[in-house]
Image 1 (spheres, rainbow, N blue to C red):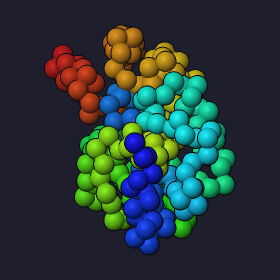
Image 2 (spheres, helix red, strand yellow; image 1 turned 120 degrees about the horizontal axis):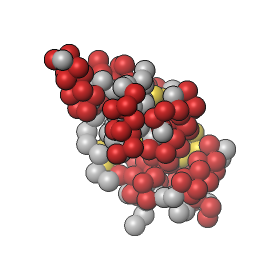
Image 3 (tube, rainbow, N blue to C red; image 1 turned 180 degrees about the vertical axis):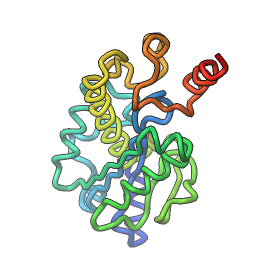
Amino acid sequence: MDRLAFERGLLRAGIRHVAGVDEVGRGPLAGPVVAAAAVFAPGLIESGLPAELKGLNDSKQLSPAARRRYFALLTNHPGVRYAVAQVEAGTIDRLNILQATHRAMNEALARLAPPPEHVLVDGLLVPSLAFPQTPLVKGDARSYSIAAASVVAKVTRDALMGEYDRLYPAYGFASHKGYGTAAHLEALARHGPCPIHRRSFAPLKAAAGRRAGG
């Protein structure tokens, strides 16, 4: 599979600034949703990625060590531009997770300079996106630009959850990253929610209802 095929097609059409965008953190019960955008320079798209980046893939398919290695390579490469945005739990509760995710994507893209001319989106069409877009189902395995965004978003969010673990050590955020594991649910039952929990999500909403009902 040519994972720069979509980027090359847009380059041939005269579009030089093509961003991949992806998010991480839709499903957890706690913490922010994080989106990242990544742009490869036209020269890299034309010639292909250097050998050290060619194993780049969907972040879920990479080990934590591999993700950190690719993150360091991407964020220090002169031919790669990237930006990150996050939307916190309170805003997720207010907007809903889908709208919060789309907000994070738009904010990450808006932080790129120069702005993208076209965006490759992982998944389905994002109606609110402020830029022309091509949605790609499983795009993080089909496009290096989306894969790069996936890795940057994942490593960024994991680091944030590590920081939250130090702030709220009772919940084990460093290990489960806010997902609804048995250990996390047990900690919630014992301690109740902390400030970064998403109170609109089912387990917390149900628990709040039980407490309100006595």
